[in-house]
Amino acid sequence: MPVDLFILGGMRMLLVTWGSTGDVAPYVGLGVRLRAAGQEVVVATSERHAPRFRLHDIPVHVLPLARQEESALAADRFDRWQSPSRIRRRVSNAQDIAQVIARGVLDAVGQGTDVILAHPLAHPLCAVIAERTGLPCVGIYTAAPGMLLPRLSAPPVMSRHGYRLAETLARAAMSPLYAPALSWINQELGTRRRKAGALGDVLRGQRVLHGYSGALLPKDFPLSDGHACVGYWWPARDPGWRPDERLVDFLAAGPAPVYFGFGSVSPGDAERLGTTIKEVVRRLGVRAVVQAGWQGLDVSADDVLTIGECPHDWLFPRMTALVHHAGPGTVGAGLKAGVPTVPVPLSLDQPFWARRMTALGLAPTFLAARRLTARELADALHTTLHDRQYRDRCAELSKIIGSEDGAATVLSSLLSPEYQTPSCNS
Image 1: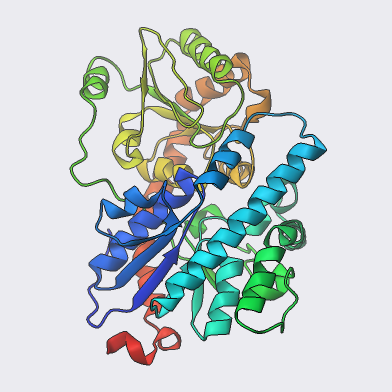
Image 2 (image 1 turned 90 degrees about the horizontal axis):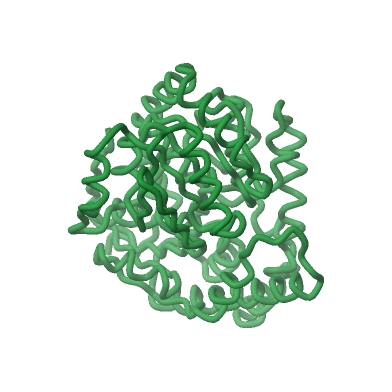
């Protein structure tokens, strides 16, 4: 069960996060728990995500990223081939994002903080700012760089050397995205001690807390020195949230449905994906709840209901199976609910988690979103629904995950002497 900690004399914490909705939602939950424990939390994030924190009375230092987010959304389409010009635009946009985050974090630090808590996308920038200003910095991760190359980091038999290589290659690939912002930080703070683009150097020796269950990783998973899995920090429901009456009526009208949702990714044309879902529902004779997501899915059928945002901790226990993109937060929510899943990953760390689910016997297979067909999805979902071993295995993991409290472990780590500064209890 979650632990409620209250610590007198709280620290001033700057929580820096950005990305997709799935990226940010766990940090809302973490921020809520830290504030409930008596800590002073300020969040640095974009205006698009600011309302999620403000609903819980968490102050927000806005990072002006609206233009860059619009460009990223426009580029986040299903493309089998990226032209050189498109790649250059994406790189330039990512560099702009890093610049904005760097300026915003430095400004927020100037307003007073005791420790910086950094999302992995912001961690290289926060680590350098923290070093130059004499502050502690802790990486707060829901994914690690090595997970971005799952063919190396999570093949059928995981290799320590394979993961290390994946981590090195991922950081090398990302270094150009941060180089201009890191150079700016060095110039702004009057030092050139470190090569601007060397992410491996910037992040070496950094303390990082990973917000997912170690039960999903191999026993000898090669986390870097200073890294530790602490368990999930769960999204916080908006105060006053109530389920849509249409959804409540639909759930009461028949057997538990199958959930289909792909979060903030775009696995192909929305109309084509909707047709695939309808065909799967027809073949298996099941009911379905479809979450619209960023791609705006809208599936209309007698046994299908399309919904907008809905807290997974409320929705998933009411489902009989899940079909989703295998983002880390969605994987965790499904396992916490004990509901079996067909993972349909698209990119980033999603294939890593999909591979781990199949390796652990939590799912019969995973299906690449780019090659998804109604026949393959119907076959995989049929096995998931009718082979009891997957439901039993998910129930076992649900007990383990439910016994962990990632937010309490983060707080305990932050209250260790190395993060205490004279201002913490003044």
